[in-house]
Length: 201
Image (cartoon, rainbow, N blue to C red):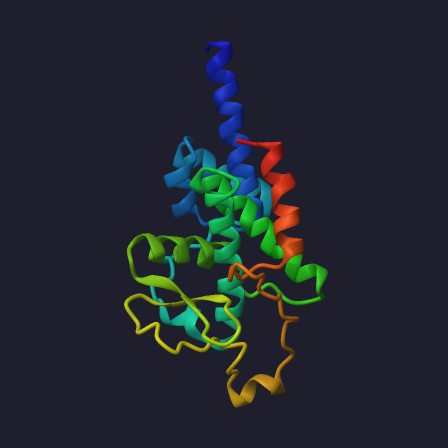
């Protein structure tokens, strides 16, 4: 085995470890990492202490429309768009970096991570398949996850029009939308830019 191929394999193992630690399922690992299924399963067991979970990936856009899930999903997807369009990350690195940033923001505010990695990845696929879209709230200007092809006129987000039951549960602290209508705070963008400069491809 040549030095180049060894380094390539090391990078694939590092990528697999990073994705497993974030919560990636085996189906996702097989599609994104150049290692055999058997090796991925061994890595997963070593890191998690259990076999990879079985079953199909979630396949419903409705989950992202519920109150709390929509807040978290919208926060994550706007971070993902920033990583793609402003930090010029590849889709996979954008997914990894934006999901890490999402978790950091939630934990920094003492909240609970609602959007797991599988849901985050599935949502990206829904956008790519034109099943979801970002709609701009007519009140706050934030951009939120919505069903594709829904009427955008007069759209009001779940933060500006929360359901009556929302006050009965602990709500996450709101991340204010900046003037350019992206659903991410100035602090989020400021933190994302140094990360993008580091590289890590």
